[in-house]
Length: 331
Ligand SMILES: *[C@@H]1O[C@H](CO)[C@@H](O)[C@H](O)[C@H]1NC(C)=O
Ligand SMILES: *[C@@H]1O[C@H](CO)[C@@H](O)[C@H](O)[C@H]1NC(C)=O
Ligand SMILES: *[C@@H]1O[C@H](CO)[C@@H](O)[C@H](O)[C@H]1NC(C)=O
Ligand SMILES: *[C@@H]1O[C@H](CO)[C@@H](O)[C@H](O)[C@H]1NC(C)=O
Ligand SMILES: *[C@@H]1O[C@H](CO)[C@@H](O)[C@H](O)[C@H]1NC(C)=O
Ligand SMILES: *[C@@H]1O[C@H](CO)[C@@H](O)[C@H](O)[C@H]1NC(C)=O
Ligand SMILES: *[C@@H]1O[C@H](CO)[C@@H](O)[C@H](O)[C@H]1NC(C)=O
Ligand SMILES: *[C@@H]1O[C@H](CO)[C@@H](O)[C@H](O)[C@H]1NC(C)=O
Image (cartoon, rainbow, N blue to C red; front, side, top):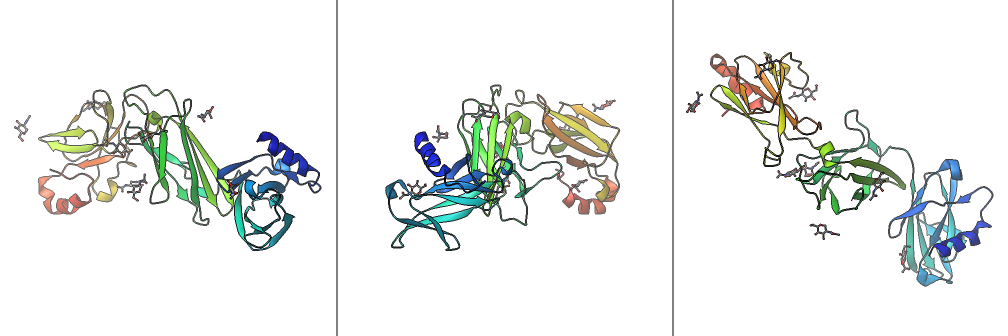
């Protein structure tokens, strides 16, 4: 097979026009879809790409057309087409009598990142999971100026490859993956290599991430229940059991705020911040308690804050209104 390609390239090398070179680096995305690496430094702004109509059509009189319908001057089963910088295309081959035979879609992989948007906190593609179950989600934000779509997802364990399946979420801007060989009770030695290929028109962009489940784990919000004069900090339902094997650390912050709009745990600083594994917190009047959780055994992300406001009996009227807006309902 290698020799065939080499012969083919050699046979054509004398036909290369002036400075236009034959692409050395191209790969098959799917049957009938070819991706050429754009490397302007190496090839200049144009590159020649070898196409073949089909093994069965060797030696036959074959004509080619681009998607616009225009007929190419190149003819035969194997041709070289000139692909300009960032301009792929769909090439269809026909027999001399005009019957359709096959097609190849030529896409260009460029080094830019334009199909999806970068955000300051989350980068381009953000992966996370709520627990150690081997399942994880990755999401991104489309650039609304480009009609992007996912064309291929590759997820493997760094050494043995493993068995990781991914599917595109119905929303179109996230994927859900499952490592079928993941074991929550064993130390995770290997990384996950994840590559997502995005396409917009005839351009392909590649995004590569490498991580372990323990890097991306972020617990769900803590549940808070009032019991007498104590708040009970409960592990999220989606966290792993037994809790003794998967301990969480709670960060507890007490803030004072009068207006509902001031009561935002994420941007209110407090001098009273405690770290604790204890699930009980003494309730004080007049303060709002903010709680979030992190895996006790590795410093991955904190959960979102859960907010609990101690309600005084006197302000019943205002309280009832505020109650609905709160994250946590009182019992
Ligand atoms: C059409 O092209 C694809 C991709 O090159 C090839 O796998 C397939 O065999 C071709 N079909 C025929 C009928 O030759
Ligand atoms: C995963 O990525 C690492 C580093 O990029 C690489 O050395 C390794 O070969 C990759 N593993 C697989 C199975 O592709
Ligand atoms: C991967 O795991 C799934 C679920 O356990 C199984 O159905 C599938 O056959 C596995 N695939 C391979 C290649 O082992
Ligand atoms: C996946 O899509 C479903 C429904 O469209 C949505 O409820 C869920 O939150 C999405 N998951 C992610 C990680 O975006
Ligand atoms: C907490 O309240 C329960 C009834 O709801 C009561 O049985 C218990 O003794 C109380 N505990 C304390 C320490 O006050
Ligand atoms: C583990 O987390 C995933 C999402 O990261 C979630 O879909 C799944 O339901 C969680 N498992 C349990 C047992 O809650
Ligand atoms: C708290 O503030 C952050 C940004 O400072 C904002 O993103 C978040 O929505 C606010 N939360 C609430 C509950 O208002
Ligand atoms: C919180 O931390 C402060 C010191 O930083 C300590 O005095 C206080 O007792 C702690 N509170 C609890 C409930 O652990």
